[in-house]
Image 1 (cartoon, rainbow, N blue to C red):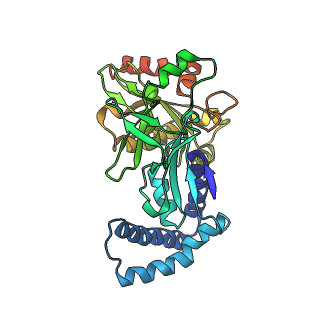
Image 2: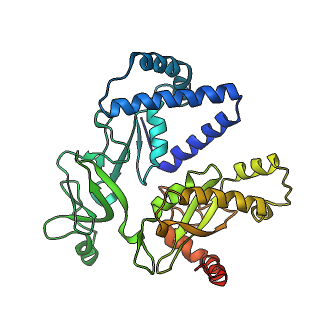
Image 3: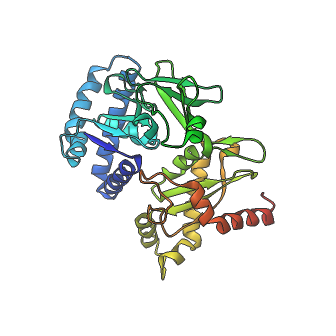
Length: 338
């Protein structure tokens, strides 16, 4: 069993994906064909439909020739992968599931000891964090906040009655500060963090993690943080995937003296702009990133921009790079785009 935060799974996924794409075209084609057929079978099973005999036969073959090799890379005995601490990109979850990894997501917080809900393989619903644990109640408030009650909920913060009263109400409900909903099967879907919701100057609510996930799907992006509270539009600070950027530069005969100057090269900026435009295509107009800046150094725990569970500290990043963010808006204003 592997319990990990999404960033660990994402890094492993990107490493394997890059290796596949660099391989011979025959191997690449076999992997893509295998995933396509295995995915078709998974979709049929998910909908409760019959899997044709020919598809079952081909999937057995591709499972033995392709999917099993990926499972062997992970040691060959991995029965269950539990992702928690932050939302897992649904696309990565689907890939792992189709390749035969038992992948589920869980949700919790320290004040709930710390697990509230977790998916299970028998009732797998990707994109959810499963049903609440036995004895744990979950209720969605009118403002979409997730409330939790049960024997796992804390009695309070030690010697901090005022802080305790802010999160524990008289009925014993813990106000988590997270936003979510329950699907028709009782699975919890976490949609964002109340304190992190960006409210634009037009009054539009933007969930930053959703925007960031779409951009981070690019193989050229390692990390991203978006901003736009009380602004007309959304901007982003992007940490590129250095190895992919340098590989792209070598492939296209781009010369550079340092990594910092490479990130300023017109071709690299255009490359990342294209990736963000692709991410914008799936977003509502008010969720689209209209300007960005590239950062050479990643967000880490050491520079206080990541939490111990590798979640971005958006407020800290915003403070450290306040001048850079302001510059983006000034440039937009000068162009008349803001």
